[in-house]
Image (cartoon, rainbow, N blue to C red):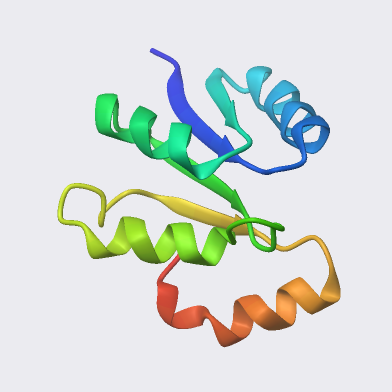
Length: 101
């Protein structure tokens, strides 16, 4: 059975490239460019993994991770935050209390 992975990145091209790479790994990725549809999908089916872009213009991956960790149903989800720039990595270090996986 393929693992279900939800990818959240407001840059659709970047998210689709990441999803294409994952398909070769027996993964069923689903791409979201906005947080609303992502949260709706999580309510319908819990994914095996959530991949979040750290810094995004409208809502950060850090904020999404905080929300997931604050709710009993989603607090145990595996979450990876991708920091694409050195500034994002520094911010990720500052946000380490988020407990991303």
